[in-house]
Image (cartoon, rainbow, N blue to C red; front, side):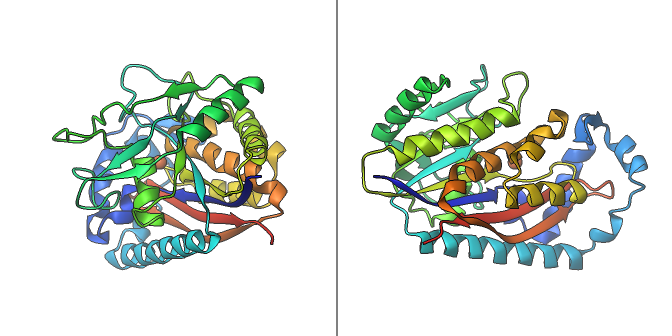
Length: 328
Ligand SMILES: [Fe+2]
């Protein structure tokens, strides 16, 4: 029977591929964002900077940025090594679309049941190699999962062909996979992922976001489905997301990481849903993985937590790198 042996939760921020010299450029995007989510409401940039008293100015020196970028690089290398050590045969990758492929509709939870994914230019080098590549998916497992989830009260959207990725300019001949997935292929799996199933959870955009409780339940059903898959394979489950962003909140992130390490579902579900908005919503993907791996006896390994800053108001990304390795 199939066995879950590994889980991983990794941030997929573009900052991870940016020279520290360039980090502050993205701050411009934050300054122009009229809806920065922080502490259960949205703020304009000037409101946020005044409220937080520009306290993060001290983290914006090139020296600070360089040190944090180096820590992120080391953490990613550690994550990739843990992935290789786990020697998995099949992967499930939980990610999300950021209006890259779903521009006219918003499925709550979609699963890709086709044969392959595409990656390559013009996707940025943090996400893709410099040439077109295809990677194998697992239609048979995807179809099995759709059936299993249906019996357990989840009606998944069956995505059998990738729409074009409209973030790509110019639009290439092939449909580049959303960045949440390409990051995992490129940074964790050395552009050589095993047969896998991408699952696209709309954590980002109201009103079709699954709640935290629903994502916990999703992890349970995923676990039971894999455990009942009649093939003798080692399975790894990956969440591609992040902690607080695009407003960093270190205190919040530490609270979340403690609950992730302690399998504290009640605590995670009790957090106000307005705290899980914008990029911070990707914590829900981390929690689905946590639920799916718990029965293996795995303890969470926190490789590193590195808040990366790009404005005095404290915008940027809270990078949390963690994995769960099943007890032998
Ligand atoms: Fe994100």
